[in-house]
Amino acid sequence: PTYETLLTRTEGPVGIITLNRPKQLNALNDRLMDELGAALRAFDADDAIGCIILTGSEKAFAAGADIAAMAQYTFSDVYRTEYITRNWEALRHVRKPVIAAVAGFALGGGCEVAMMCDLIIAADNAKFGQPEVKIGVVPGAGGTQRLPRAIGKAKAMDMVLTGRMMDAAEAERAGLVSRVVPLDKLMDEALAVALSIASLPRLAVLAAKEAVNRAFEGPLSDGLMYERRLFHAMFATADQKEGMAAFLEKRTPHFQHR
Ligand code: HXC
Image (tube, rainbow, N blue to C red; front, top):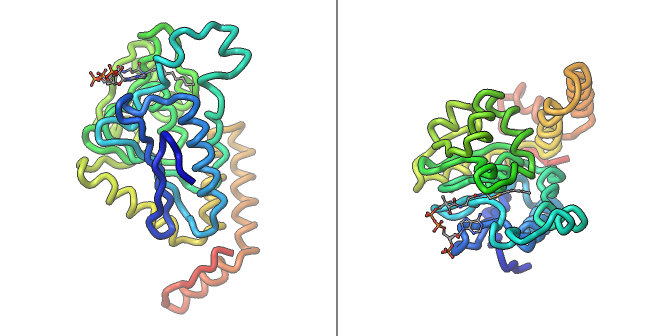
């Protein structure tokens, strides 16, 4: 399919989605979020794809929700219709790992979309922030919930209350991003990580993502039980037999993703 606000392509078993509203620094409007949901669902449903990369341009991952589109909305507009906020849950429902490859601005909704991904790889020019308070609103797609979980209360309050930007080095120190690389290496690095994930047994990868996500819901005892049951469940898969046999026989495993 072709999209108005996105580019999609594949590199072997990796699906790559590029946000593409360059004139607006990839500001996120309803059209873009609808298309992003559709593109994610398509890659998630495609058996040939094992990992997804979401990226923007060198200047901006995304500079936030589209301020021009929402400036005139009333409370009644947004509450009734879910304009702006509709379809932002799509990323949460993707079962395959999604890597955010972030260069430039990841602000407001852009930072929130990056945090909805499973891990963030940042270029050295990346800047993260939740500047909503400066334009009279508050984060609306998880910023006040995912940021404290990622970087702790003190730094999250600092970001959300002042609206300041955090550079890539600070974001890595704070634990918001998993790796920082030079801008010209960003896609190479994201692709290397995605290819390594895609080469692993699919069922184990899906279960691992599901188990880690459980760490952010409910009590520890439930998360531990959930993890243990998923661990047990892996013994029903062909790739567990193959992976362990190959290790013991000192040979390369041949995974069937079953
Ligand atoms: C609409 C935007 C935009 C945005 C940038 N543009 N961000 N348009 N919505 N969020 C547009 C500008 O209007 C401008 O258009 C063009 O992109 C280039 O931006 P400049 O400001 O000229 O670039 P620069 O001086 O380099 O500054 C970059 C910037 C700044 C620091 C990122 O653009 C900025 O502060 N943007 C807004 C960031 C923000 O407040 N985000 C949070 C939004 S609220 P023209 O036509 O003039 O060339 C939000 C809520 C999420 O995200 C809720 C989720 C449900």
